Structure formats: C-alpha cells, structure tokens
Length: 316
Ligand SMILES: CC(C)(COP(=O)(O)OP(=O)(O)OC[C@H]1O[C@@H](n2cnc3c(N)ncnc32)[C@H](O)[C@@H]1OP(=O)(O)O)[C@@H](O)C(=O)NCCC(=O)NCCS
Image (cartoon, rainbow, N blue to C red; front, side):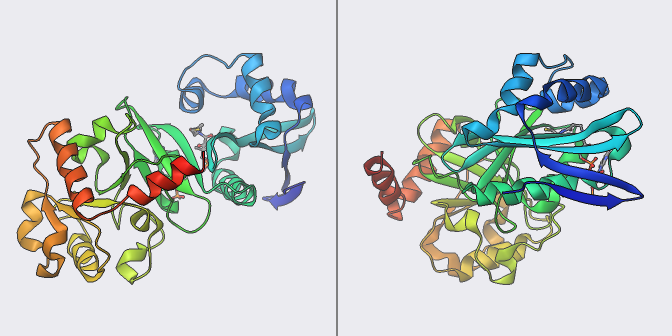
C-alpha cells in the first residue's frame, strides 16, 4: 500500500500520500480554490461540496476505498495540489474521482491516476468507474488513452466510464449475474442499451479498436480481450468505414468460441462466411424490448450465461 511518495518535477517536490481525517480543512480549501468549471466537472454541480461530504470522502479508506492527496510545500505552508480516490461500490468495483489545481496540470493527473489504479489492483479491485461530463475532454482523453469501456447512462450529458486495474482493457464487474452484451461501437447503437441494468442484461461498449487508445486493441493482435471473454454476445455496431472494422470482423470469425455476433445491417456483406451460424442481424428499427429479445434468443441458442447466473446465485 502506498505510504508516501516524493516526486521532483520542474524544481518542485510533490508528496503523494493517503488522506487522513485531519486533512479536512486543507481539502475544503483546495476545492474552494478550484474554478467553477472544475467544480462542475468533479461534482457535476457548481456548488462547493459540504464539509460532511468531504469528511465522508476522506473516510473512504475505512470502507475499503482510498483517497490520495498530492501536496506541495510553499511559503504559506503545505497546500493540496491534487486529490484522487475511489469509494467501494461493488465487490470488485470502485467509483473514482480526481482533481488537479490548474497550475499543476500536464503530468500530475495521469500520474496520480496510475498510482490510484495500482492501489485499487492491490486492494483486489478489478474495475474503476467514474461519471464524466461528456464535455470533459481532458478527463475523457486520459481515460480513452488507457483503454476504457462505457456503460449506458440515463443522462446523455454524463458518460459512465470504466477502466481496468490490470491490462489495457476493463473487465466486467463481478457482481452482475445477468447476460452480458458487449457493443463494439457507440453505447447508444443498440436499442436494448436503454434497458440495461433493469434486471435482464448488462451492457458495456468498447469505443472501437482505434478510438484514441494508446494500446493496440488486443483482439487485432490475436490476444485475448477481457471484455470479449466475459461477454455472452458481442454486437458489432461500428460504421463500415470505421478504422479497424474489417479487421475486427475477421478477428471474430477466426475465434471459434460459440459466442453470438450481432451485425449492423450494413456490415452483413462484409462479414466473413466463417462467422456462420454465430452471426445474427441487428434491426436498427427494433424497439428496446424487441432488440433485447433478439439478443437473449441468440445467447440462449448458443447455450451461454446460465452457468454464471447459477454460480452467482449459489455464492450469495
Ligand atoms: C481531469 C484532470 C484531473 C486531468 O489532470 P491533468 O493533470 O490536467 O492531466 P493532463 O494535463 O495530462 O490532461 C489529460 C489529457 O487531457 C488533454 N487535455 C487537457 N485539456 C484538454 C482540453 N481542454 N481539450 C482536450 N484535451 C485536453 C491533455 O492533452 C491530456 O491528453 P494526453 O494524455 O493525450 O496528452 C484535471 O484536468 C482536473 O482536475 N480537471 C477538473 C476536475 C475533473 O474534471 N475531474 C474529473 C472528473 S472526476
């Protein structure tokens, strides 16, 4: 577990350490120093957080989570220049958030996120999630470059993003026993996404093999992808001109794993014959309920997912 790290950059020394309840005043002062737009990005509101909220955030370490602070010594004493932490929200899932003061951006955000991910992994978490404003280009760029997945969100202005704590691809949160539908492409491309989380299926979307990621898509290199391995059905919803679309279809055809592969109408003619009976077609005009029925039928026909549901029930 991280105790204390000191990093010297540009003639300044930054100390990173876990937060304690004694940091309440300093963290409140840090949040009060942030511009309104940063508050909106961090708290999805322009109000300063209440002291009781900050107290609870600082106590996450006692509830299986973690909060890290980055501090710098100055003429008026030590000041917080960044915080990053997560709250435990599932057996292997943490919900994270972070802030960096404007005059220390450029390296501290990515560095602190790396430390947080490493610590989450050490604590046995496999996934970190965050609610990010769709307009928060800086944070999204940071997460995109790591390799992330999106979960359907009720509010189009907020994206629910997942990153893994090991490797360049997130995994499926362990607690959800429902059939898992992986969308390759926009999360809204499949009408059934709107019914995700309502007790019938789980949905994650991978933005695609070339969507701003710094690691190459493992599938295109013949390696395994945790998102795909954990999915009961995969829906290829990339546009036919999207970079990597043909390679992706070829990669699915090569894997003889019995997993059903749903295809956009305009990809039908591009799909290799080897996909055979695993391929089924996605109707863009289907209602959410109809789209869900089609995918559930494909999953049932392939004999998938029953095992995991039984496993999850017996371990409760
Ligand atoms: C998000 C945040 C923590 C990132 O930390 P940081 O130290 O600024 O990180 P960086 O400066 O390396 O920026 C991260 C990436 O965003 C890019 N970026 C920064 N500002 C950007 C902008 N306005 N538009 C597009 N990209 C931007 C950077 O180029 C970098 O991308 P790269 O890794 O491909 O070079 C920091 O900006 C912050 O505190 N924002 C306010 C609070 C917040 O948004 N928290 C996240 C929600 S919980």
